[in-house]
Image (cartoon, rainbow, N blue to C red):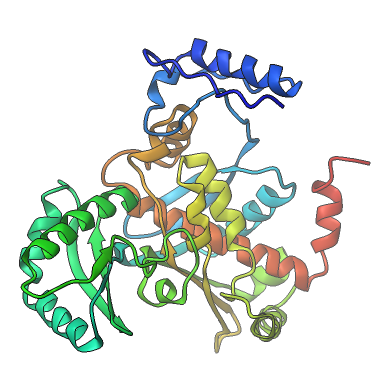
Length: 391
């Protein structure tokens, strides 16, 4: 394989011609064909800020699941949910969950927290110096907040968590970020705050880094499960007993027994959450709607709770403590991704919490449907019917 540099066009690197030149380069260097990769309908001029070395597209199959009925504070009514995936049975399973929850009256969704973090670390000569610094940060919060917010029109510094270890003080800045996911926004704002701190702290600082990794960006952490990152959303539904018997071919007691047993298995395995497969629904909606797909690592963590009610019905809830979504900025403005967001009524300002509620409700539907398929012993047969594309 050639070691030449990938072609760039200094004058106009986001054009069909520049993309075609890169495809020809890769084809010559590797011997592979990029015939399908080069077929796309949008103008590459919209891509600055989304990708470098643009060469074409990878096409994902897209389907719609639903209708999903959501009784949220931001999302209300019936929705057809766009899901991009290559896994057969996925949309059928989510649609089945949407069908039964809709028959039960819909899913109630609640956004209970909303913050994005950046977590710098400051190092000192000893622990007492670090402690003195922590008191100074608390006393000077308003000035730090003002410095941070000079970089953004939308972001607001809500509070600063502090964690001491050795001779380091870890600060976790919590920002509200409007309808943007906010990682870049909070990074820039926290950088400005750190510069102000370095210039104004009266004592010596050994060194500092913009991230000490306690924001745990794009990876799961227990801290984010407890304190949240992005939107903390709860979806809940009560399924009538007869509906479960008729539609899912099982019972609330069997569903609950499976949930109880699987939680013990997950505990022994060291699972980081007790959901069944939240990453499936989150990833497929993320790809369809232009979210940062790496955020699935944080967003998939789920806390599931279920019980058989005194009336014999089945209460089921899913808490997503770290759901990171945007309705504006990033990949949301790309051609097909924007279309999918517009299907949900979730493109543009003021729509991020609505999107979060829809995704949380979607996750719940997938959890119920797969859980019931396992209990009723239909899991393998459904994959045999819908999930194989080879003899």
